[in-house]
Length: 323
Image 1 (cartoon, rainbow, N blue to C red):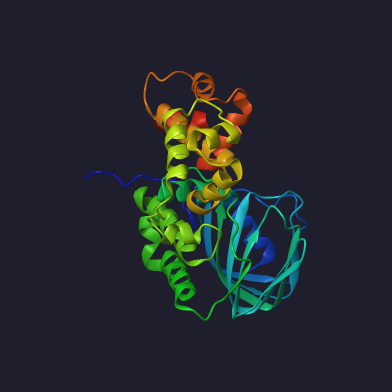
Image 2: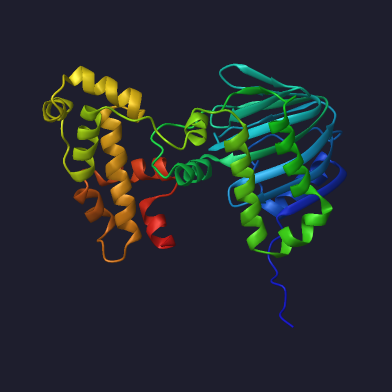
């Protein structure tokens, strides 16, 4: 018989523990992620299920007592909260309040504290922004050049959000523990399912692109400019020169790109250059990251690395290592 691999469990279950006991258990499983936050009052009781794997956490939690949690350092995560009792309040530029009919998507880079009120309970997940960007880039088969922005609040009385809640119920159910805590394939698949669920169901600025697989037919002058950029990705051609090649005014070409390509001429050029760099880095013998950056018109390698990670959710060096 082959032995089952032993590794750090990713599912924590707590049955109404005092806050300090829960904190100690949480730290033993996942490290002290909130070491900079003041300790919670000792009379707070916490129970539920919390799981974490590779930049994605999911939970079904309840809290007895009112308390606040501070976040001294910004975190590069989006938190999605589906309240089932009481109230949760996030403090950032404005105040976001989640109750049983109102779900929240909160960028944790912007928040500094949150409050749990009236014996709050919720289903939720937190997803690293790079994980969201990498998955969206894969689904759309192109770089993501704009920040993903989710609707900050949603009406939970719709089937899509009940589906997310059901998926979290599945992930936190006891029947799933053995596969999640001892396997290697299921945690990765669950992580992907959770990311896909919010990208599919929670409205954001790329929702329309995900639902529209085919683009509108562009006019000839836009096609000519697109074809030239595709054929010469390493050339940084100005809008004026592209308009001259396409036999229209620069303004007409700019408007055509916004309507039919969905971005500016400059953004499209950057997208094509990043796509070609992505393809080159997948191949062995294509040169170093610096050589690839320079080949496709990025004179500043540091800037290229920032653009690549922002577009694909992974650094060029990490991407090459995966390949």
